[in-house]
Structures are given as C-alpha cells and as structure tokens.
Length: 239
Ligand SMILES: [Zn+2]
Image (cartoon, rainbow, N blue to C red; front, side, top):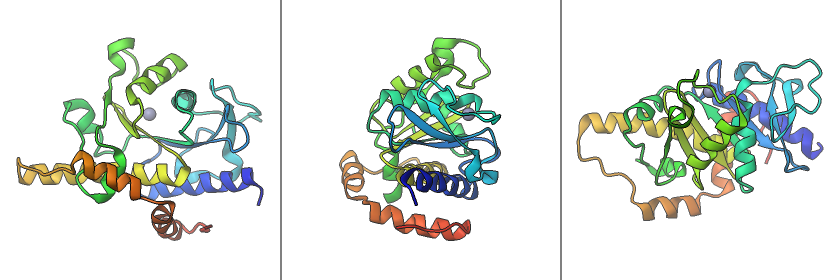
C-alpha cells in the first residue's frame, strides 16, 4: 500500500478508536501531517468520527484551504490543526476533542497532572488556553488562524493543552502516539478526580518520573495498545 493510502487508512482507524474510547463523540477530530509534503495535512470532512470512511479524508494547506474538496465540507475548527503544524515541525499528528473528564479542569483552573504510568504521556504540565483572554466573547470554536496561533503559543513545546469551556488539543510525533496520549489524557483526568475525592494528599508522578516514562515509551509499547484497539473496532492492524 502506498504511503499516503496507508496513512489515510490509519487515520480512519484512529477516528474509530477515539470514538470507541470516548475521546470524541459526534464532535472532535484527528489529523496527520501529509507524509510527502510538510506544508499539508490530512483531516476528515465534517463528519462524526465513528462514521468516517477513507473517501472522507481531505487534504489541506496549513492555512486551512482544502486542496481538492470535491464537494466535501470541512470542519470549522480545522485551523487548530494547521496552526499547530505550522508552529511545531516535530508535530506529525493532532487530536482535538471535548471528552467529558477534561472539561472540569479547564474551567476550574485545577491542573491536570500525571497520576499513573500511562498518564505520563500528557506531560509534566498541562497548560490551559482561555480564548476569551485575547478574543473576548466568541462561540468558543477556533474559527481563524489567529485563534489557532494563540492556542499554539499556549501549548508551547508540550504534548497537551486544555481549552477553557471547550476541550483540549493533543499533539505527537506520530499518529498512534497522539491517539495514545489523547486516550490517556481522558483516563488520567477521570482517575485524578477519583483520587482527589478520596484524599487531599494525592502523590502525582514527579517531573523526573514523567521524563523517564516518556523517554522509555517506545513505538512497540504504543503498538501493543494499537493492536488491541484495532481489534476492538474491527479494523486491520499493521505493524
Ligand atoms: Zn472543538
């Protein structure tokens, strides 16, 4: 299978996995940088992730212009993706979602911190971007590149960033790793709430532990999860 076709197929699988794991519902999206052109990215047309097929995957310039739309309507919030690819040459994939356990952290200012081994992938610090600070009252959607650039600034060099009253973004060095981080961000948020309801003295992972786990999480580790998730959504697994 050609590189581009394989990535499109994998992106469809990523959408199905994120839907099954409760990271996206009818909304939310995942993209990958184009394998042959770093100034472009691949993202579905505007459709619920669990319904997405290969023909739904569109190509975009970093400014959000569709390359060959063929009548397909894009997501309004595609600017998130282009702005993050533009800001970070190391980012090869982006997830944007509104999963239920992350929302309370974005509005209370209470920091999400890695609470368990797999949660280390979210990074030692998870910043919160408040669109209102720069753009005032909006419908909270990222509708322009200027808003995307501001979000990218808040994300900085990290892997995750919350969006106040909206959701979060997750970035990574390859698609499977980004999906992995998005799934464990949601789980970390849920477990943190449970732990903090039990005790005021939760022991989070230390900065050093987060670094060590992140350094030692290999593609083989991620593939173990990926194979399992592929089976759960009845999609083929490729090494
Ligand atoms: Zn959104």
